[in-house]
Image (cartoon, rainbow, N blue to C red; front, side, top):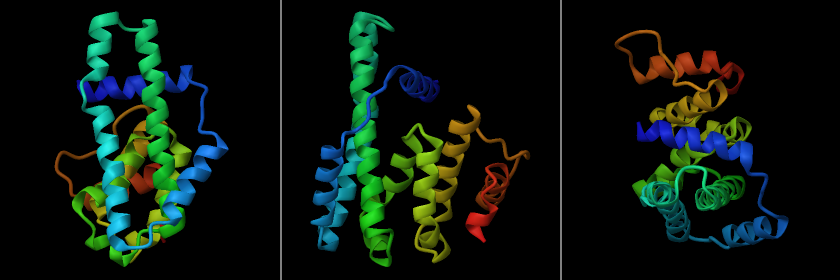
Length: 195
């Protein structure tokens, strides 16, 4: 139930928030990412992004604001805009990271939190086109067996939910992650991407 609340909140944010990151902020992120020279620095950066992504979702603030001020109050709308903006910052940092450093063999040795950043941040982003952009950046790592199929399936299932406003149904009671992968590739028409 809580999961569905977050989904509806993100969709409502898209309708009411008309704010994007400015060029200066993106340049600042890009400069910071370009300065990540060692595996340890890159691992720490990605793990920090994951922690930020989780902290804005699991801090209980959303519920507190609604309980105290009411749904659709000024305070709730202000908090929604701040949440959306921080979510956007996290996503663009991941995008710039992938465009700069990619998902390489060294990434497979990073901490779990660092590796979880890719599916979680991508999945939490409310734009199908942006999610597809990240997926395209990850495909070569997937084909090289550097990123697990579970992460790719999670991203594609979130893409399906954004595009069709419902959870993907594999169509059978018992299925494997490979069944889900194949079904999502068909449903999202991503066959050319994975050839």
